[in-house]
View 1 (tube, rainbow, N blue to C red):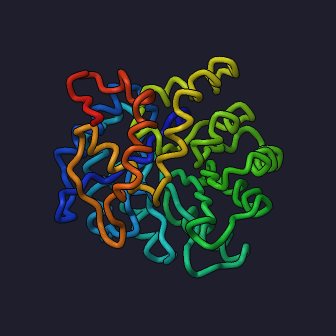
View 2: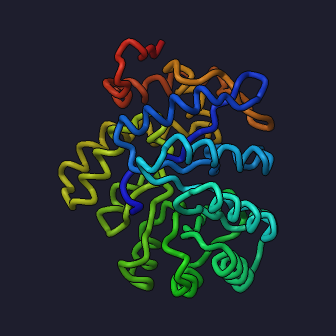
Length: 302
């Protein structure tokens, strides 16, 4: 059910930081028309760290209702509190999400046994498929392959978003957990090789800007067509890189605003993209964004 290009969707905001529901509606429709294979709502790229629990739940409900089973919806429901994670995961299930993406508890620095116990109680309490999310560069803890292997035996835990960018890590997890356990890349720059090794797809930042091209890249890689996948990835390589000129989702939101798709809104402590990076990001967008918007007159990369 979950494979291919799964967009880590931004949360569109007005300049005062309030959530822009109309832009959210328009982005969802664009992604469905552009063949995006699934939507991840309220994840890292969606600024979940600065959303209130009520806002997060409302975003999930709104997205599930609008998508209306056309593509899968995966809800970000992780936090550094096991109790809050339980509450958000239950709410996501009640809203009709197809699965939950549960980040490792950040800041607390739990042990591997603590991580196992955290995920185990969520899986046993909430009747919804869970995707583990390992991004040690942000969380300060690393969900090691041996712990992933232990967790893979829990039926509700169906896969992992592995965002270390280390291909050897993906190979290790695949060998430990088998093909029935789904691996998703959390690093666009290495996603092509990740899928050619056996990953099921990518939870993608780049897909926010170039959804159709990311879909095509994933289709080629999942089919084992490395030549076509290389060609598709070459057009996106600079975008993969330059969307991290500053912390995600700062460059992504700036790019979408430049494309005329969202207002210039982001929440503190994040600020709008520094002007010194504008030309670099525009350069990366030129090849990747061409023909991406179905209505060509909406493209306006200055």
